[in-house]
Image 1 (cartoon, rainbow, N blue to C red):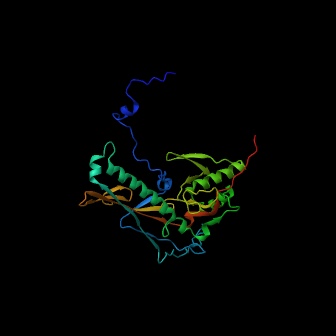
Image 2 (image 1 turned 45 degrees about the vertical axis):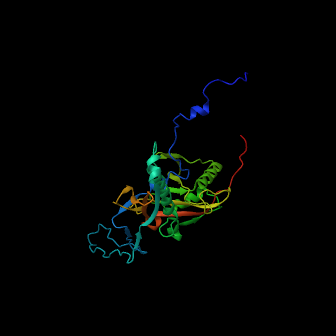
Image 3 (image 1 turned 90 degrees about the vertical axis):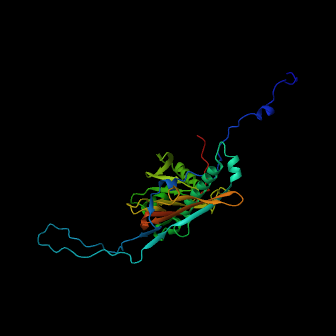
Length: 315
Protein backbone atom coordinates (compact mmCIF):
# COMPACT_ATOMS: atom_id res chain seq x y z
CA UNK A 1 0.00 0.00 0.00
CA UNK A 2 1.15 3.52 -0.78
CA UNK A 3 1.80 5.90 2.11
CA UNK A 4 1.35 8.97 -0.10
CA UNK A 5 -1.37 11.21 1.43
CA UNK A 6 -4.54 11.79 -0.61
CA UNK A 7 -4.66 15.30 -2.00
CA UNK A 8 -8.40 15.83 -1.41
CA UNK A 9 -10.85 17.41 1.02
CA UNK A 10 -10.66 15.62 4.37
CA UNK A 11 -13.48 14.18 6.48
CA UNK A 12 -13.03 16.58 9.42
CA UNK A 13 -13.19 19.65 7.20
CA UNK A 14 -16.20 18.34 5.25
CA UNK A 15 -18.00 17.59 8.53
CA UNK A 16 -18.17 21.33 9.25
CA UNK A 17 -20.52 21.84 6.27
CA UNK A 18 -22.68 18.76 6.80
CA UNK A 19 -26.21 18.77 8.21
CA UNK A 20 -26.16 16.24 11.04
CA UNK A 21 -29.24 14.04 11.34
CA UNK A 22 -30.24 13.68 14.96
CA UNK A 23 -32.88 12.09 17.15
CA UNK A 24 -35.21 13.67 19.64
CA UNK A 25 -34.04 13.23 23.27
CA UNK A 26 -34.06 9.55 24.19
CA UNK A 27 -35.31 8.94 27.75
CA UNK A 28 -34.08 5.50 28.82
CA UNK A 29 -36.32 5.34 31.92
CA UNK A 30 -39.54 5.17 29.87
CA UNK A 31 -41.58 1.95 29.94
CA UNK A 32 -44.67 0.84 27.96
CA UNK A 33 -46.85 1.43 31.05
CA UNK A 34 -49.18 -1.45 30.22
CA UNK A 35 -51.01 -1.12 33.53
CA UNK A 36 -52.38 2.34 32.76
CA UNK A 37 -53.28 1.15 29.26
CA UNK A 38 -55.26 -1.87 30.43
CA UNK A 39 -56.80 -0.48 33.61
CA UNK A 40 -60.27 1.00 33.15
CA UNK A 41 -60.39 4.67 34.14
CA UNK A 42 -63.29 6.84 35.27
CA UNK A 43 -63.37 10.62 35.06
CA UNK A 44 -64.60 12.51 38.13
CA UNK A 45 -66.48 15.79 38.36
CA UNK A 46 -65.12 17.07 41.66
CA UNK A 47 -62.14 14.87 42.55
CA UNK A 48 -64.06 12.56 44.95
CA UNK A 49 -65.28 9.01 44.33
CA UNK A 50 -67.46 7.25 46.91
CA UNK A 51 -67.65 3.45 46.87
CA UNK A 52 -71.05 2.42 48.27
CA UNK A 53 -70.93 -1.22 49.26
CA UNK A 54 -73.77 -3.49 50.31
CA UNK A 55 -73.44 -5.14 53.72
CA UNK A 56 -73.22 -8.83 52.94
CA UNK A 57 -74.47 -11.00 55.80
CA UNK A 58 -74.16 -14.73 56.38
CA UNK A 59 -77.62 -15.44 54.97
CA UNK A 60 -78.89 -14.08 51.65
CA UNK A 61 -82.15 -12.23 51.20
CA UNK A 62 -84.99 -14.78 51.40
CA UNK A 63 -87.05 -15.23 48.23
CA UNK A 64 -90.02 -17.31 47.09
CA UNK A 65 -89.21 -20.08 44.64
CA UNK A 66 -92.34 -22.20 44.28
CA UNK A 67 -95.10 -23.07 41.84
CA UNK A 68 -97.36 -24.20 44.67
CA UNK A 69 -100.41 -21.82 44.61
CA UNK A 70 -100.88 -22.36 48.35
CA UNK A 71 -97.62 -20.56 49.04
CA UNK A 72 -98.56 -16.98 48.36
CA UNK A 73 -96.65 -15.15 51.09
CA UNK A 74 -93.60 -13.52 49.52
CA UNK A 75 -90.71 -13.08 51.99
CA UNK A 76 -89.95 -9.51 52.97
CA UNK A 77 -86.69 -7.77 53.76
CA UNK A 78 -84.09 -5.36 52.45
CA UNK A 79 -80.40 -5.10 51.70
CA UNK A 80 -78.52 -2.66 53.90
CA UNK A 81 -75.71 -0.32 52.83
CA UNK A 82 -72.50 0.67 54.57
CA UNK A 83 -73.08 3.67 56.79
CA UNK A 84 -69.61 5.07 56.23
CA UNK A 85 -68.50 4.14 52.73
CA UNK A 86 -64.95 4.86 51.67
CA UNK A 87 -64.31 7.99 49.64
CA UNK A 88 -61.30 8.27 47.35
CA UNK A 89 -59.85 11.73 46.80
CA UNK A 90 -57.58 12.38 43.86
CA UNK A 91 -53.90 12.85 44.61
CA UNK A 92 -51.68 15.15 42.56
CA UNK A 93 -48.33 14.53 40.90
CA UNK A 94 -46.76 17.83 39.82
CA UNK A 95 -43.54 19.35 38.50
CA UNK A 96 -42.38 22.69 37.08
CA UNK A 97 -40.33 22.99 33.90
CA UNK A 98 -38.20 26.11 33.34
CA UNK A 99 -36.86 27.04 29.89
CA UNK A 100 -34.64 30.03 29.13
CA UNK A 101 -36.40 31.83 26.28
CA UNK A 102 -33.04 32.86 24.80
CA UNK A 103 -32.18 29.18 24.45
CA UNK A 104 -35.58 28.17 23.06
CA UNK A 105 -35.55 31.07 20.59
CA UNK A 106 -32.13 30.24 19.14
CA UNK A 107 -31.86 26.46 19.48
CA UNK A 108 -35.30 25.16 18.47
CA UNK A 109 -34.56 23.71 15.06
CA UNK A 110 -35.19 20.95 14.13
CA UNK A 111 -36.69 20.17 17.56
CA UNK A 112 -38.66 22.67 19.61
CA UNK A 113 -36.87 22.96 22.97
CA UNK A 114 -39.99 23.83 24.95
CA UNK A 115 -41.99 21.02 23.37
CA UNK A 116 -39.25 18.47 24.05
CA UNK A 117 -38.85 19.58 27.67
CA UNK A 118 -42.59 19.40 28.32
CA UNK A 119 -42.89 16.07 26.49
CA UNK A 120 -40.15 14.45 28.58
CA UNK A 121 -41.67 15.86 31.77
CA UNK A 122 -45.08 14.43 30.84
CA UNK A 123 -43.56 10.99 30.30
CA UNK A 124 -41.80 11.22 33.67
CA UNK A 125 -45.08 12.15 35.40
CA UNK A 126 -46.88 9.22 33.78
CA UNK A 127 -44.16 6.86 34.96
CA UNK A 128 -44.66 8.16 38.50
CA UNK A 129 -48.44 7.83 38.11
CA UNK A 130 -48.17 4.11 37.33
CA UNK A 131 -45.86 3.64 40.30
CA UNK A 132 -48.32 5.42 42.58
CA UNK A 133 -51.21 3.26 41.35
CA UNK A 134 -49.31 0.26 42.69
CA UNK A 135 -47.35 1.62 45.65
CA UNK A 136 -49.12 4.69 47.05
CA UNK A 137 -49.60 4.42 50.82
CA UNK A 138 -53.25 5.53 50.58
CA UNK A 139 -54.75 4.20 47.35
CA UNK A 140 -52.00 1.93 45.97
CA UNK A 141 -53.08 -1.57 44.97
CA UNK A 142 -50.50 -3.34 47.12
CA UNK A 143 -51.55 -1.45 50.25
CA UNK A 144 -55.27 -2.17 49.79
CA UNK A 145 -55.38 -5.95 49.35
CA UNK A 146 -57.34 -7.49 52.22
CA UNK A 147 -55.74 -10.28 54.25
CA UNK A 148 -58.15 -12.86 52.86
CA UNK A 149 -56.87 -12.08 49.34
CA UNK A 150 -53.17 -12.59 50.17
CA UNK A 151 -51.44 -15.80 49.10
CA UNK A 152 -48.00 -17.07 50.08
CA UNK A 153 -45.81 -19.00 47.63
CA UNK A 154 -45.42 -22.70 48.36
CA UNK A 155 -41.65 -22.79 47.85
CA UNK A 156 -40.64 -19.16 47.28
CA UNK A 157 -40.35 -19.29 43.52
CA UNK A 158 -43.51 -18.50 41.47
CA UNK A 159 -44.95 -21.85 40.41
CA UNK A 160 -48.01 -22.55 38.25
CA UNK A 161 -49.76 -23.83 41.38
CA UNK A 162 -49.27 -20.43 43.01
CA UNK A 163 -50.90 -18.58 40.13
CA UNK A 164 -53.72 -21.12 40.21
CA UNK A 165 -54.22 -20.26 43.88
CA UNK A 166 -54.44 -16.57 42.94
CA UNK A 167 -57.13 -17.42 40.42
CA UNK A 168 -59.24 -18.94 43.20
CA UNK A 169 -59.19 -15.51 44.86
CA UNK A 170 -60.14 -13.49 41.77
CA UNK A 171 -62.19 -16.04 39.86
CA UNK A 172 -64.94 -13.69 38.68
CA UNK A 173 -63.69 -12.55 35.28
CA UNK A 174 -60.02 -11.90 36.12
CA UNK A 175 -58.44 -9.37 33.75
CA UNK A 176 -54.66 -9.75 34.12
CA UNK A 177 -51.74 -10.72 36.33
CA UNK A 178 -49.18 -8.00 37.04
CA UNK A 179 -45.53 -8.92 37.67
CA UNK A 180 -42.01 -7.50 37.58
CA UNK A 181 -40.09 -8.72 34.49
CA UNK A 182 -37.81 -10.73 36.81
CA UNK A 183 -40.84 -12.44 38.38
CA UNK A 184 -42.23 -13.07 34.91
CA UNK A 185 -38.96 -14.71 33.86
CA UNK A 186 -38.94 -16.80 37.06
CA UNK A 187 -42.46 -18.02 36.36
CA UNK A 188 -41.53 -18.92 32.78
CA UNK A 189 -38.57 -20.96 34.10
CA UNK A 190 -40.93 -22.90 36.36
CA UNK A 191 -43.26 -23.55 33.42
CA UNK A 192 -40.32 -24.73 31.29
CA UNK A 193 -39.19 -27.04 34.09
CA UNK A 194 -42.64 -28.59 34.24
CA UNK A 195 -43.01 -28.79 30.47
CA UNK A 196 -46.05 -26.50 30.34
CA UNK A 197 -44.95 -23.44 28.31
CA UNK A 198 -47.52 -20.63 28.56
CA UNK A 199 -49.55 -19.56 25.54
CA UNK A 200 -48.79 -16.11 24.08
CA UNK A 201 -51.47 -13.56 23.21
CA UNK A 202 -51.40 -10.14 21.51
CA UNK A 203 -53.14 -7.35 23.42
CA UNK A 204 -53.08 -3.66 22.44
CA UNK A 205 -50.06 -4.27 20.20
CA UNK A 206 -48.01 -6.15 22.81
CA UNK A 207 -47.23 -9.85 23.13
CA UNK A 208 -47.83 -11.38 26.56
CA UNK A 209 -47.73 -14.85 28.01
CA UNK A 210 -50.94 -16.11 29.59
CA UNK A 211 -51.76 -18.51 32.38
CA UNK A 212 -55.13 -20.24 32.23
CA UNK A 213 -56.08 -17.69 29.56
CA UNK A 214 -55.25 -14.66 31.72
CA UNK A 215 -52.41 -12.43 30.42
CA UNK A 216 -49.36 -11.77 32.59
CA UNK A 217 -48.46 -8.08 32.24
CA UNK A 218 -44.90 -6.89 33.03
CA UNK A 219 -44.17 -3.74 35.02
CA UNK A 220 -41.05 -2.57 36.83
CA UNK A 221 -43.25 -0.69 39.35
CA UNK A 222 -43.74 -3.92 41.32
CA UNK A 223 -40.32 -3.66 42.91
CA UNK A 224 -37.86 -6.45 43.68
CA UNK A 225 -36.45 -5.86 47.17
CA UNK A 226 -37.64 -2.26 46.85
CA UNK A 227 -35.87 -1.64 43.52
CA UNK A 228 -37.01 -1.35 39.91
CA UNK A 229 -33.70 -2.69 38.63
CA UNK A 230 -32.16 -4.97 41.25
CA UNK A 231 -28.46 -5.61 40.77
CA UNK A 232 -28.28 -9.15 42.12
CA UNK A 233 -29.98 -12.24 40.70
CA UNK A 234 -31.92 -13.04 43.88
CA UNK A 235 -34.68 -11.00 45.44
CA UNK A 236 -38.33 -11.02 46.47
CA UNK A 237 -41.34 -9.32 44.93
CA UNK A 238 -45.12 -9.66 44.58
CA UNK A 239 -47.47 -10.73 41.79
CA UNK A 240 -50.92 -9.16 41.54
CA UNK A 241 -54.08 -10.50 39.94
CA UNK A 242 -56.62 -7.84 39.00
CA UNK A 243 -60.19 -7.63 37.75
CA UNK A 244 -60.79 -4.22 36.21
CA UNK A 245 -63.99 -2.42 35.25
CA UNK A 246 -66.69 -0.53 37.12
CA UNK A 247 -69.44 -2.78 35.73
CA UNK A 248 -67.52 -5.84 37.00
CA UNK A 249 -67.04 -4.41 40.51
CA UNK A 250 -63.34 -4.41 39.82
CA UNK A 251 -60.36 -2.12 40.15
CA UNK A 252 -60.58 1.23 38.35
CA UNK A 253 -58.31 4.20 37.93
CA UNK A 254 -59.64 7.66 38.74
CA UNK A 255 -58.82 11.01 37.18
CA UNK A 256 -60.17 14.57 37.06
CA UNK A 257 -62.12 15.18 33.87
CA UNK A 258 -62.25 18.49 32.03
CA UNK A 259 -59.08 20.09 33.41
CA UNK A 260 -58.03 23.52 32.10
CA UNK A 261 -55.21 23.14 29.55
CA UNK A 262 -55.73 19.36 29.56
CA UNK A 263 -53.10 17.53 27.50
CA UNK A 264 -54.25 13.98 28.13
CA UNK A 265 -56.37 12.03 30.63
CA UNK A 266 -56.13 13.89 33.95
CA UNK A 267 -53.00 15.81 32.95
CA UNK A 268 -52.74 19.59 32.48
CA UNK A 269 -49.92 21.86 31.34
CA UNK A 270 -50.17 25.51 32.39
CA UNK A 271 -47.95 28.41 31.38
CA UNK A 272 -46.86 30.28 34.52
CA UNK A 273 -45.25 33.26 32.82
CA UNK A 274 -41.79 34.64 32.05
CA UNK A 275 -39.65 36.12 34.82
CA UNK A 276 -37.34 39.15 34.65
CA UNK A 277 -34.48 36.95 33.45
CA UNK A 278 -36.44 35.67 30.47
CA UNK A 279 -37.10 32.20 31.91
CA UNK A 280 -40.45 30.69 30.90
CA UNK A 281 -42.12 28.43 33.45
CA UNK A 282 -44.68 25.64 32.97
CA UNK A 283 -46.65 23.74 35.63
CA UNK A 284 -47.47 20.10 34.85
CA UNK A 285 -49.95 18.17 37.01
CA UNK A 286 -51.62 14.75 36.98
CA UNK A 287 -54.58 14.10 39.29
CA UNK A 288 -55.16 10.42 39.92
CA UNK A 289 -56.22 7.70 42.33
CA UNK A 290 -57.37 4.08 42.29
CA UNK A 291 -60.48 2.45 43.72
CA UNK A 292 -61.11 -1.23 44.52
CA UNK A 293 -64.86 -1.70 44.25
CA UNK A 294 -64.98 -5.21 45.75
CA UNK A 295 -62.49 -7.05 47.94
CA UNK A 296 -62.32 -9.99 45.53
CA UNK A 297 -61.28 -7.72 42.63
CA UNK A 298 -57.60 -8.07 43.53
CA UNK A 299 -55.27 -10.62 45.11
CA UNK A 300 -51.53 -10.76 45.70
CA UNK A 301 -48.93 -13.52 45.72
CA UNK A 302 -46.36 -12.44 48.30
CA UNK A 303 -42.66 -13.13 48.85
CA UNK A 304 -41.99 -14.28 45.29
CA UNK A 305 -38.34 -15.33 44.87
CA UNK A 306 -36.93 -14.40 41.44
CA UNK A 307 -33.42 -15.86 41.69
CA UNK A 308 -33.99 -19.61 41.25
CA UNK A 309 -32.31 -21.09 38.15
CA UNK A 310 -31.94 -24.61 36.77
CA UNK A 311 -29.44 -26.60 34.73
CA UNK A 312 -31.03 -28.62 31.95
CA UNK A 313 -29.34 -31.74 30.48
CA UNK A 314 -28.05 -31.44 26.95
CA UNK A 315 -30.34 -33.08 24.42
